[in-house]
Length: 607
Image (cartoon, rainbow, N blue to C red; front, side, top):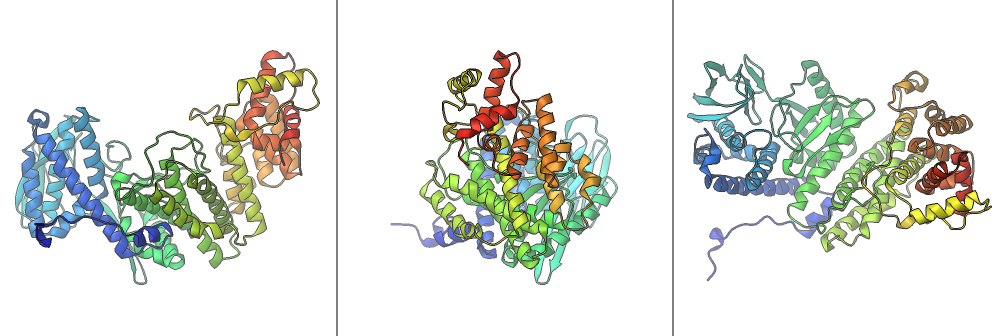
């Protein structure tokens, strides 16, 4: 006889309706909350399993109090203030810590500190929950190089000499102290503010009409990194104010142009790890273990930040979905081309990128519709709809997809497919196509290795004066290698983004030299001086015929002037042109220019 319904275990389930809605960007707030609750349950189980396993090897606990004490303190806090404990469990870095420490324990290794320090972080989690619940308590927490972290609240700083030690946290009636080796830090009443010996976790709040956004800027939690614990990196006060302004601007843009997403994002994205600005790069990253968090570099403007937040939110949602449903069979092979990475990707990474940039394309599409005069929005929409569709088409035929995975991609395609035919300003579309061709050709030159026998046959035919190649270039079946052959420069794409930037972007002649890796030929190409660009790339190849960016740049510049066999070869099979020219350089005392080999091979490359 089955147990009564009240006694049966409850499971987190995802309906096909919700699954399809997430695929199409139609998720709502309630769906996002259910996804977050599933993550919270997963973490609770993971922590319980971690502490149970750790208790079996008490010699690994070092000077820590019993782990049962942390569990009991969490239970007390939950009885008093369940929402506080729920917030601690949904803190993204609780997930990062639990996953990282479980792997250490399973492998019997220490990580970046003794294992007991990582295990002891559960006492810090329990102490933070107890403070939030306003309990009377006393416990000990780890101290890393003088830093005692209370997750999601802040960090006490001590002048410790030992790299790893313990501090005592105690308090009553909402007044709490942290003591270590004769020093005491009194926690301020407003924990997010700074005080003597205390750094609080800053909170940024933005309200747009009925929409409320709240993000922690966490520069303190040791488990906020992507792979392993990292030290605190306090963001200067001036940069915090810049973050506040940019977050407010980004939230307003999302609320105005994607109002449905604005209702969902605050549920799934609660914390940012702020990083310094990197010139011409919108750096961001996230991990499935830290549901709710993204590592983000300081952007230049609110639109850039809005696109980045949407990108990372998409990663977060997909990470949560993958904890509930299998979309693909395990396959770590780095074998798939995606237009946003310079290296081959496994299917898991490619799928993550498709979903993330689908969201980015939706954002720029909305901005382009709202402001038809924005060259930037038109270009970015044209670019990301093309990039995400290119990768999606490749993934839909992949044999490692499950039935659910194919259904998920079909849902994305239902929205993304029709966008390919939407009218976009002609110049923006042309530039987006050039960027796509540029990157694909550069990837081919660096990651594909032609058959040596074909290369030798072509080189011999050239040396024997054959007017046409004996074999047609067939670039379709070459498997990629993750080890790149040469470096790649994204300077042309950076310059094009400067060209299409909406005012008040600085004039390109004043700033192009600040673009990393940019050459005079790149500047000429980006500004439409194609004859000058051709001569510039010819000169670059005369100096270094192996440089991938120069090979592809010459192909782009020649193509921009009209049909040309060398352009066809350099853009469709640059790896073959490069390999044949290398062979000739190794066997002939006076090898021809790369362009001549490209024009010869290009006779048999379809236009």
